[in-house]
Image 1: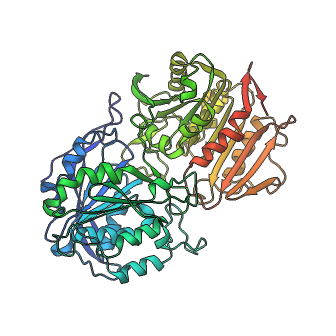
Image 2 (image 1 turned 135 degrees about the vertical axis):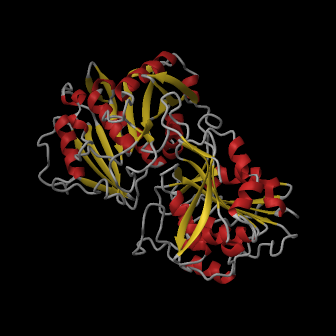
Image 3 (image 1 turned 180 degrees about the vertical axis):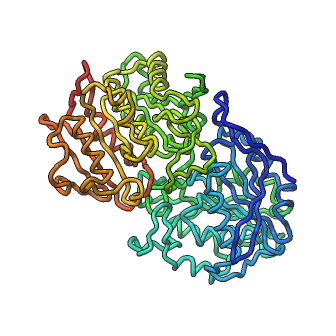
Length: 599
């Protein structure tokens, strides 16, 4: 019934979606099958946004697909990463807005099941920071109910003519412990966070012409969740916006500007699927914030497009037979002194992501602004990882993955790519070649370590985050010829891991686990003796969430370092980027092949 296509990875257009069109899917809820539609537009990129759309009573997903403007909006969105739209529908034509909180086979459970299906990567990849909910009339009520039930996975909710969630439901949600804290499952209530304390950006659009189309407390619920105590301000003739002014609990990883609730009253707004408001709902509200992993419940921050908002240079050129993408950030201080050699940081994204994602996730541009260095965010080409864990599955559609093991069929040579990339950046800008650094997250962490071992003379220091020197079959970069034959020279290293990712990186090194093994390798590479300390429990310092271990050279240079972060999932964060520069990268230079400690 629905037109769709499936294509193979094309080296001339590697980031185009491999599945395009409309796809019908089902989920099982309470032993019953319920359906939904997914629309993937041309131009949807890996790790894009996903918007869940819930219609009013009496309308199906097919009606919504045909008659609403969401497909047109997805097709014509001018951002580089177009949104994917999920069309849901009420069972038997009617949403149960009166269902009790926690009903295991109800409409909220259906939305939860579709979310879990949408988080899979079999045909597309929606990034975990970019899931949004919106609904019209009764669908708007269910959108709020679903957001209250599982608040840490949604980056925003908007309703038109339907926000009257039952007070009993709101109270039950507010009082319930939040066990899903966006990558951190807190089953023991260790942090004692309630669902009503998880901030949710929300836009409540009342429609006095719609039955039950006037809010009776939902906007106030979301204001409390966001910690907004101030009066709102008029931001449009029909809209009052409430924004938190107090610093959020995990600044700088959270931005108070993203803790916002908007309230509007627009007569007739919910008629015709609210089509006249869809662009405002998406462009002016939902798109404007993302919920990044790292802090409990996620870290809300304002969305900034690398080019349109941050002014990054965008490059897309053929290198080694593949079209390759990278972003270059030049802070104003560097622009004002173009002849002065500036340090350079390469920052690599993880599996499924892109340079755009890592720019927003790590916010290295803020560090570059403060300290005046050049920044490069490259993008990998699509590949399939054979490992099966929380981060990847061999059944996934090919998604950006660094080809450091040379296993992708006809895939690119990453070392050649980075050599070319360095040459191109140096040709365009005045680079201090003694102060070039590499960092990255997850799969990008292993790419970072590959560069540090294979191109040691290029880099003054490296900081791999949430990744280890894997010992598993097909993932041991030490077996690569370019690393086995490397020249013996030092490279300062600072590894990071989260407490909540033991499936990949044990938080504490002990015995011969992967973390201890990686530290042993780096101690050996940096001539620290013995390669493995007699006692891994010695030498730790703890401040806040950070647990730091450092091994120093005779002159005090911190050559091998490891940090694990309390209750942090498989993620990175702004504060980590600042620490890497301030306490590590800025302390090292490489001159005549040797590491100088700048103290």
